Amino acid sequence: MEPGNDTRISEFFLLGLSKEPEMQSFVFGLFFSMYLVTVLGNLLIILAISTDSHLHTPMYFFLSNLSFVDICFTSTTVPKMLVNMQTQSKVISYAGCIAQMYFFLLFTGLDIFLLTVMAYDRFVAICHPLHYTVIMNPRLCSLLVLASWFISTLNSLLQSMMMLWLTFCTDLEIPHFFCEINQIIHLACSDTFLNEMVMYFAAVVLAGFPLAGILYSYTKIVCSIRAISSARGKYKAFSTCASHLSVVSLFYCTILGVYLSSAATSNSHSSAVASVIYTVVTPMLNPFIYSLRNKDIKRALRRFLGRETVKM
Image (cartoon, rainbow, N blue to C red; front, side):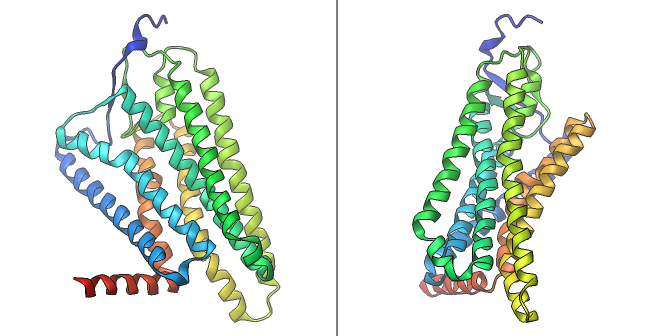
């Protein structure tokens, strides 16, 4: 099919999650509530860590960065969806779609890398406790976070710039609530082989390798915990990484579930609904997982909220 003058498109149409008008108010209220909980929950984690000197350690430094990324991650997709629902419009500009895709890829990559770095931090803490403060020094922690930002930025910039090469035909409807890269590629009229190869290569390198690193770290952690003689010592060692393991399992299992199910079926609407799990639900649950299973975070939150109450 000849693309003709279709390179000058100005907008796409996000079909969203529900086509039924009577469901719009319910979906809007649900996502607005979830978005508020996500932002407030992660913001409380950041404030609690920053105001409590006892939490100025590598583990909580990475956790505060993860909370910030989760806020940005959700803010990339949900506000635009809420605005479209409120205005009863499905339009997103071409530039806005590319920008949304860029930031979505950026913060997805950062989520993956930060979870990997946190697994390495737990590996050092449990397997090499005597050298922990030497290995996980502030300089290395900062470099790990900067490297995560650098690699994620390069990946998102490359894939977003490659989208500018594609030409599009008359079908500009995206069966999703945000500009998901795979959906955009399928709308293109021009050859998308290179885009797809880069997308799959990035998925293997930027998601597969970090997952392998996380699994390796926890394999070593389990071996070290098994070598501990006392049951109390085993419980204490495992409790330090239980929250992180829960977040990793939730994040990776939901992403794998979404993309394996979308590969098995051609139902784009079902894939969009399933994507809500890792784009909205997971960032919302992370603060609860870390606060409910972590005495230090709960104590810091009580101190922070108590201080705010006194000020008021």
